[in-house]
Each structure stands twice: as C-alpha cells, then as structure tokens.
Length: 157
Image 1: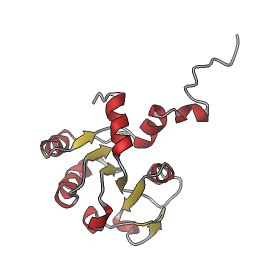
Image 2: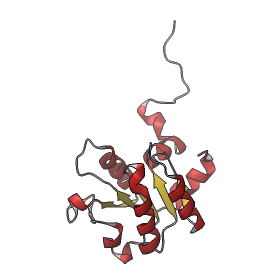
Image 3: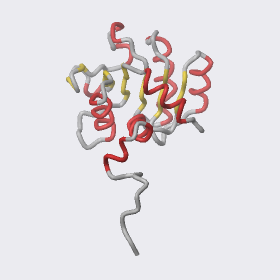
Image 4: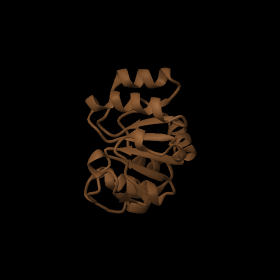
C-alpha cells in the first residue's frame, strides 16, 4: 500500500462528493471531524449510517445506506469508517449503486485485499489504511499551520 503523493493529490483534487460510510454525529468521533474538515475544504460530504439516517450533518441528510443516496449526488468517493470485515458488502453496494464512483478510500487501520481486488477489477481506484484529511493536510501544506512538520528546529540545547 505504497501510494505516491502525486496519486493521492490527484484523487483529492478531482473529488467533489464523498459518501462517508460510518459517519458519526458525535463531534469527538474521528469520522465526524474528518467529515467536517472535508466539508470545510469544499467537498460535499454525505454521511451514511443507519443509526443516524434522516438527520442533517453539514448541510446534507445522512443516508441509511449507499443505496439511499439520491442519484443526483454523483458520488466520486466512498470513505469507509468501518471494520475491515464490513468492507466487502460496502464495496459491492458502492459498485452497484454509484455510477459516478471513482475512488474507494479505507480509513487508517482499514484494509481488505479481496474487496480491493474486486473494486480495482471494476476500474475503481482503491486507497487503504489512509485518511483523506491527513493526506490533504500533508499534501497541501496545512500541517504547517498546526505547528507540525515546519522544518524549523525551535529549541536549543
């Protein structure tokens, strides 16, 4: 799972609509703040979680499943915040119901070789064990804004 910066950057630059599977409405959960961050960066993020279906999150109605997202949404990417064993049916559903889909992205700690092979055979790009928020910040220089990776040594011995 070695992805070039150019590859990840191209995905993030061309993606417009992200379905976030496993999103939470709890602000302390990683799925919430990743979805919030991506929304603030201009992406349309549609939450997918049957436990929160019908609620509003960042201006979008949370869907119970990928099948419940309106076809007009034109989802480019599915970002998966679920355990690896939950990935295959999510990938199958995404391939069946999202005609505009280009990328399946699995969060840090999430990978599934068989589901990846299936999606890639269908012509989709798959990223595993990475976070689009972290990659966006790293690739577009925003980690520096938080005081990280500045390249400056500020303490003296």
